[in-house]
Structures are given as C-alpha cells and as structure tokens.
Length: 464
Ligand SMILES: Cc1cc2nc3c(=O)[nH]c(=O)nc-3n(C[C@H](O)[C@H](O)[C@H](O)COP(=O)(O)OP(=O)(O)OC[C@H]3O[C@@H](n4cnc5c(N)ncnc54)[C@H](O)[C@@H]3O)c2cc1C
Ligand SMILES: NC(=O)c1ccc[n+]([C@@H]2O[C@H](COP(=O)([O-])OP(=O)(O)OC[C@H]3O[C@@H](n4cnc5c(N)ncnc54)[C@H](O)[C@@H]3O)[C@@H](O)[C@H]2O)c1
Image (tube, rainbow, N blue to C red; front, side, top):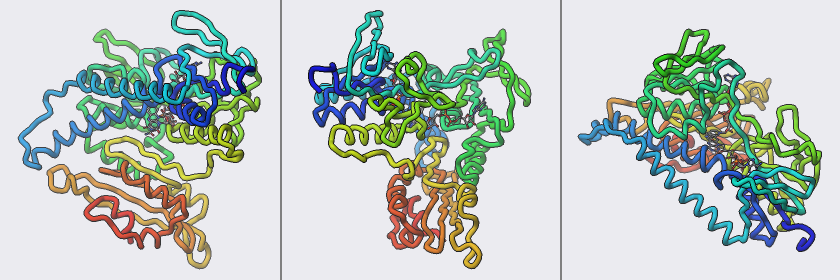
C-alpha cells in the first residue's frame, strides 16, 4: 500500500490495545502510525492497572508490617509512611514503561504522532497537537482504540468529587474518604485508602459491591471490610454534594450526611467517542455509545476497526491487547479468520484487600444456566466444592485472615465451570487454572494433579 496513503494502518489511541496492535502489525511489515493525545500507555499504564497495582502492593506491605511483622519477630512500625515518596517511585516506574514503549516503536518503525485525532473522512485523520498545529494523515485502515472515561452522576455538586484519575493525582493521603460505586474501581480504591489508614466509607446502591461476583466471595469480602474498619453503606441513595466551611465535602444520602476530605465517583466508565466525528464516516454506535463491531473487529465501515474499551467486551487490558494482536495477525500475517473468541474464559482479579480471583460462572449464574445436580432428574446440573482456611502467612500471628476457595462443577463428569477465591495470594493463583478450564478440565483432572505443599493453591486440587 505504498504511495496511495501515508500509512497502511493508523491507530487512534496509544493505550493497551492500540500499542499492541501497532507493534504486531509493524512486525509483519505494515507501515503504522499511532496518534496519542496524552502519555503513551493509555489508561492502564498511566491512570489504571499499573499505578493501582503499585499502590495496592504498598498498601499490602503497610498492612503486613502493621499487623503481622511484630508476630514474626520484627520490632518495627509503619508510623512514617512517606506517601509522596511512594508516588514518586510509582511515577518513575511509569516513566520507564514510557521509555520502553518508545523503544519498541523505534525498533518496529512505528511512527508516534502526538496530538488529538478526529476523522476527516474514511481514510483521513486530522491531528491537532498541543500547540494547536493541525496536520492530516491518510491510511488504508484506521483502528479506533480510544478507550473510556469515568462517568459522573447527574446531581448538584458532583464536580466536588473526583474520579480514579483524581485518586492517582494524590501526593498526600486524605484523612477521610468516601468512595461511591460497586465495581472493580470502587472496591480497589476503597481498599487501598483504608489499608493506608484513611477513614474510608464505600457507598453502594445495592446491598453489596461486585454483584456479578460469586456471593460467597463477596460475603467474605464484606467480613474483611468489617474486620479492617472499612465502612460499607449498602442500599444507598444520594442526592447532592456540598462543600462545607471546614473544607470537607458532604455527600447527602439516605443514610445521612457523609462528610469527608475526598470524594471519589467510581460508578462506571463510558466509551471515549466524543469529538471523533464518527457520524461523519458512518461508524455506528450502540445504544450506550459503544462502537458496533463484528467478530473481526470491523465497524460498520470495513476499513475502520475498533478494539478495547471502546467496544462492548470486558474492559480489561489483556482483552484489548489480545483482540488487537489477533486483528494484526489477521490483517498482516495472512490469518483470515483469526479473531478473539468472545466465549473463552476470561480470568480476572479484583485487587481488593484481600484479592479476589475469579474464572467462569458464579454459583447463581451456573444454577440459572444448569440447575442443581441430581443424578436422576438433572444429571447436567451443578455441584459446589468449597474450602475455607486460615492463610499460613497470617496463621502464626494474632491477625489470622481466611482464604475462601470455591469450585463449581457441572454435569456427570464434573466439568469445572467456575473457580473463585478470595484471600492472600489468589491473585497469582488463577491464571493457570484458567488454562485448564479452557481445555475443559474436570474435577477428576484437578484431583489427579499433585498438590504443591504448603501453598494456598493446593486447596483447588484437593477439595472434597
Ligand atoms: C482505575 C483503573 C484500574 C484498572 N485496572 C485494571 C487492571 O488491574 N487490570 C486490567 O486488566 N484492566 C484494568 N483497567 C482497565 C484497563 O485500563 C483498560 O481496559 C485498558 O486500558 C483499555 O485499553 P484501550 O486500549 O481500549 O484504551 P486506553 O488504555 O484507555 O487507551 C486509549 C488512549 O487513547 C487516547 N485517546 C483517546 N481519544 C483520542 C483522540 N481523539 N486522539 C488521540 N488519542 C486519543 C487516550 O489518551 C488514551 O491514551 C483499569 C482501568 C481503570 C480506570
Ligand atoms: N482489576 C481489574 O482488572 C480492574 C480494575 C479496575 C477496572 N477494571 C475495568 O474497568 C472497568 C470499569 O471499572 P468501574 O469500577 O468504573 O466500572 P464497573 O462497571 O465495574 O462498576 C461500576 C459500578 O457502579 C455501579 N453504579 C452505576 N451507576 C451508579 C450510580 N449512579 N450510583 C452508584 N453506583 C452506580 C454499578 O452498579 C457498578 O457496580 C471494569 O468493568 C473493569 O473491566 C478492571
């Protein structure tokens, strides 16, 4: 495609999905440009997974020193947390990731174009850089990977709160915080702040956070909240936000006024399509603003593709990366039917305190789908295996913490269709089990696997 267009592939958005697609396409010889308005790496690297995980690690360390270290014989304390120093180390790490992305672009000959892009027509993107200079680039194919942004509620004073971006901008910890929302972000931010000693309240509309997660697991999470002093206000309604004379922020709720130093909205995210001029090029959106794509990531204009949080798939970095790489393989490595299998198991971890890991169906979903097992009337139904025990790390201390693990198996052969856990280490346990489940592993396959002792994960292969 040399000559007719500036690029074979122009990628709009240099986040998880955009970078992965660009590099993979360029490796196969495509001439690729990436347009990014902000820092390379997008949400995940700059204001998502990476800074979150660093703070989660820091918060775990803080708690372990505070609650466990004395019983392990260390005479130490955590009275002097220098949060600004932790943030500095986090940002230095992120800056090294930027360098590594730039290096991979240089090695793969991907052109980085800094600026805000919008469609001129089906093959042209107008880019406005930070100085206001405008340039137009053309490409045979254009990939939209512009991600998402936080939603704010439509109530008076909502702007007095912030979102996850505002949380990552903190260089000093507030004394108190109110987090509104029930998803990954709300639970993770509330857990980090509370673990660092911030007086934290989590406000959810329903009776519990993470309503799509297995109920046994979220019940365990709520028990942990109570033990850790993280206040949870379920079944909440809120009507307005006010600034108080003492500088605090008041959230007015059906439970009364919640006054705090820091209010975070974590009530969901929406696709980043505004200003792209998609209507001009005939790219269709669904009723919630996500770009409509087919299994091959093609939009309603076949030379315009879309992946990542902008489409209706789980908004997770590995999903964006995998979809993008498979797209590049299909387009530039002669794999015409290669595409992301939407039915595959998508393992996921919520970095709560302690972490939750989950693959496949929760019990209520499995029951709804298959019903309960009965050898006569419903041999295709489900059976449940559970194990709850004290984590060895904490068992020798005066702060014992439980691990709960659960398997959901289906049919006479006991195919494992759900695997869930909460507790120390589950975040690093479930990736391999997802491989086994993807291959159709049964409870007998699990039982035939030799356990690794003494670990937490051995429980998954020894449950009765
Ligand atoms: C707080 C938080 C924590 C998260 N933690 C995890 C986690 O632990 N694990 C996980 O798997 N996922 C996590 N996620 C989700 C993950 O970050 C996203 O799924 C992932 O970043 C999506 O990648 P993407 O390529 O679709 O978009 P993004 O990474 O959002 O990248 C989009 C890029 O496009 C740029 N852009 C947008 N519009 C334009 C334009 N017009 N012109 C030029 N550039 C533009 C943006 O600046 C951005 O850099 C988290 C998200 C958040 C918010
Ligand atoms: N560990 C991880 O992998 C991780 C971490 C963070 C984010 N993410 C990804 O980012 C996505 C976005 O995360 P999120 O937490 O913003 O969204 P989410 O969709 O997971 O959760 C939003 C929550 O807010 C609740 N909600 C909606 N409107 C509300 C309102 N008006 N008032 C109160 N609550 C309301 C919803 O019921 C839902 O529980 C996630 O779905 C996930 O895919 C992943």
